[in-house]
Image 1 (cartoon, rainbow, N blue to C red):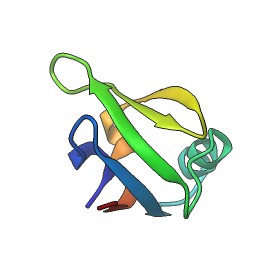
Image 2 (image 1 turned 120 degrees about the horizontal axis):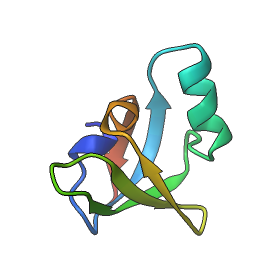
Image 3 (image 1 turned 90 degrees about the vertical axis):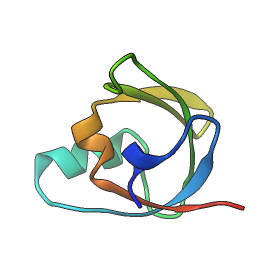
Length: 75
């Protein structure tokens, strides 16, 4: 499952970020690291961008970037 598939209010653990290059490095620099807990706060109308909460702050991501983040739902 990827971050763009998460429903608002759900929490998950980041398993990995797929791809390579500057886009992945940018996501990691923003705090999206393996093992971190992330929650989807809300989506814009049309689904792009999505807002997530990670490490105590809100972050907006393009749907394209959210698809790179593989997650595991928390029960």
